[in-house]
Image 1 (cartoon, rainbow, N blue to C red):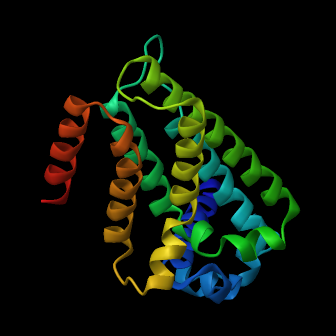
Image 2: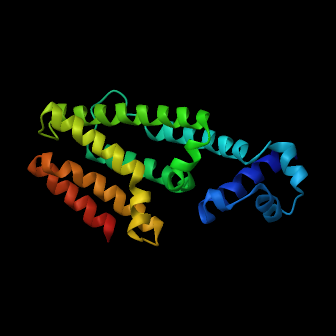
Image 3: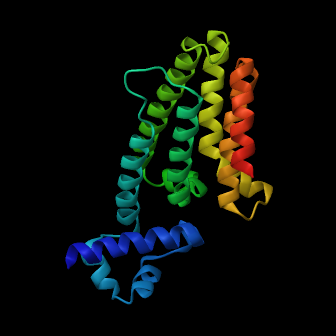
Length: 208
């Protein structure tokens, strides 16, 4: 029962953080939503930052899985498309972290270090994928161009929700979809003709 209550607290907190923004939700709000006493909540979690750290651990595990590279072969466009879907779906499900990223990380050093580790792994993975696409003959680009594209992919994926919010977009799910397309279009200038045509087909089907 205790484990079930703990899980319910985490699930409810995630839903509320995503819907209302983490700074606007207190532990009392979470307890009220669950119809439990604040004391019951504090039995499972010391404070709100403790809840956030547990949610971050779930996010971190899922992002690590999303960043896994294809095994035993070079990547193709379909691999990048699928990986972006997994990464952006993870960002969507834990969007409060990205929406309030600077505030959350500024007050929690442990999370700041852990998020930096995720960014480092994502950066390494993006550079490896770009080199793989070049080796597979999918892209034609210099080493500097591949490195710059990899960094741009990571920057857009990390801050796309913040950009969409600043632009006034109301539909964050549509913003995620647009972010995936934006990242894929970074590759377009370097693709060979057949791969560029394939990319355009993928994007048209995705947006229909």
